[in-house]
Length: 234
Image (tube, rainbow, N blue to C red; front, side):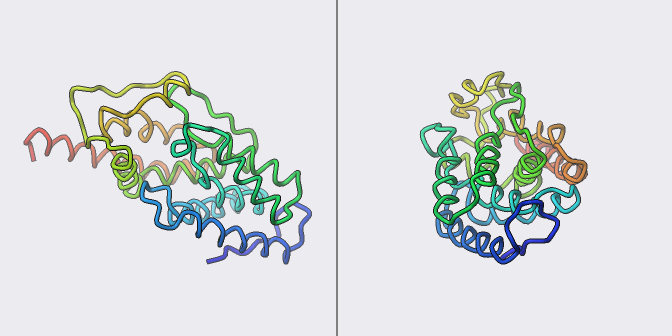
């Protein structure tokens, strides 16, 4: 479903051109990501897109930049491209050039995509613009709550991780390189402590912070029940 451009955008494209670009990009991303099994599929992208638009309208951000960055943010995730952090922004640039997006807009979108990912507990976000912060918030919100839990286990299965290995403790990675090298041998449960439970306090916008509170509590409740069952207390 096309999320039609709203006129609060500050970019120079007219409404008709924006809708053409968005529709083409929606179809392209849907074709590329449909059926992907790690939780980074088309439906993840669609949820991030919708959430990003919701936040952008409240934060009065450039909607064309937000929407295109949200649509293209996982077009080539580094985790599935030999840890190449530029894979996503490079592929996005190729597409944006192909459909004739202005270079300034394209560069902004590609910068967002390049800097978007979580890179370790001790690594600060490199996001520089309001639009980038909004897309990052939307992406991180989808890693939280009930859907975030489902995605964590889907990604874990993709990487052949155990559900949980109590003999291996979580690691709060202090560099992006350490985070990349980590294979998640402690299982998907460790991923909650290495990333997911940290996201609430790393939201950029007031809108996202409110949503994150509820989703964070749901994950805490889930983990409490998980360990009760694991330890035979439930």
